[in-house]
Image (cartoon, rainbow, N blue to C red):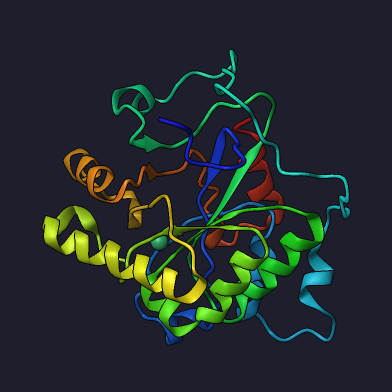
Length: 248
Ligand SMILES: [Zn+2]
C-alpha cells in the first residue's frame, strides 16, 4: 500500500496535549506519552502564571522560513542505515511505528487533543516554524472543541482517529471498537470536514486481529511510534530533546 503519511519521518513521536487544566476538563484524558521540543511550553499551563509569554520565553529554535514539508514521488526510498521494525514487514502495511525516507526527518504526532488552551498554543509554535504535524484526537474532545480541530486542519496539519473515549481497545469487542472509531471519525468530519486516514490506539493497545479488522473496515493503518521521550514526567526540555535525538 502507499505510505499513509504526507511527510514522512522515520521517527514517529508520540505526544500528549495535557496541561494542568486538562484533568478537570476531561477525566478521560489518560494517555501519558511524550513529544519533542514543545513539551515545556505546553506543560507550563499548570505552572504559576508568568508575567512574560511562556511560549516566547521557551522557544529555542530560530524561525525557519525555508522549511517545507518533504514530499516524494514514486516508491519510498529505503534508508540503508535503518533496520525495519519487525512489525513493518510482518503486518504488511497495517502497522507503522516508523517509515523510511531519504534523509533524517522526525514525524511529530500529538495525542489526546484537542485541548482548548494547549492546542492553540502548540499551533502557534508550529506555524512559526512552518512545521506540519499529525494530531491524534479524541472524539469526545472534538465534540467539545470543534473550532480547535477546524483551525488545526486549516493550518495544514493532519488529523488522526484516537477513538471516541480513549478506552483500551484490546479489551473491547469488535462492535465496541467500531463504535469508538466511527464516533471519533464522525466528530472529526463534522468539526472540520475532513476524514481521518489513520488511527492510533490509546496506549498502543490493539491486537493484531483487531488491527486487521480496523484496516479492512475503516482502511486505517495502525500508527504507533518509535520514540517516547516521557515528557509528561517533566524531565526538562533538554532531556526530552536528547532522548529524542539520541535515537537518530
Ligand atoms: Zn492517547
